[in-house]
Length: 317
Image (cartoon, rainbow, N blue to C red; front, side, top):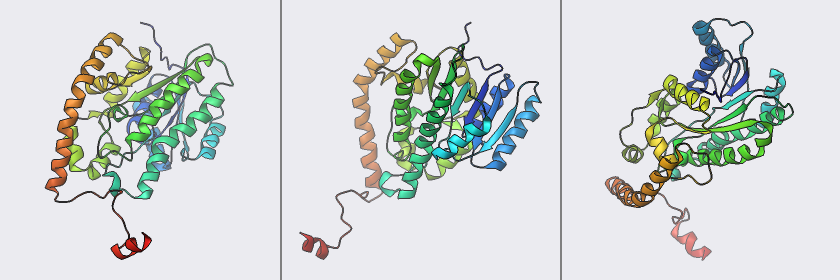
């Protein structure tokens, strides 16, 4: 079978690789004969990933795994990473991300701002710096920029206001970049994972509102190892939009547009069915939300509420 994602003797940079899917991909790619540089803010965690990778796969002649400590939500630090590694990467994985579930109007400014930094700027800035380096050197084989979005980019709902909009933005960014670097033999792939049993997922569960859990329904997260194997296999097949479970594939099919697709006829049929049944499902979801707030015996804060006292408000009028 033709392999669209050959990593043997290639050079990869993975951001957000101190834990979760990023760390797991570092181990997988190194094990396949790829030289890997992992990037994150916490040096101790990066050292641990390097150690675990060597413990699993041993040292490989001609291939290395190393790390660079950097905050890739800052543009100058992205530039520093490329300067330190000293090569034009063949593969770039932008895995950094963090969800802090909560009702939007109850989140503070710091949480909202960090959502933009971690979930969008990290990929935006590093993609920009990496692609500038990659497009300066033409190579005869296919190279890859892999952006990690989320299945929530297709279907977002209450509780994910800090996270889902940024992941939807990454989907749009991937579609744009795919066209811009087409002439440079670079694939831009976008990944839409479902729930994955990682450190981030466990942290996410701590603040997830009850209504978010109700709408999500029971979920069995897959392991980071299984998630990476699914993604790796899909990239080998040439898929540029990748989901990790059936519900992700269904939701992806609900918003096709001009984006990449696979088993396209099936997706069109799913899209047709989704357009019929989604409005009905929304009625039940909205009822669940109303019932939740009624049960809480409170009305959530709204933009119609004023922080001014009645007397001050009257004077302003």
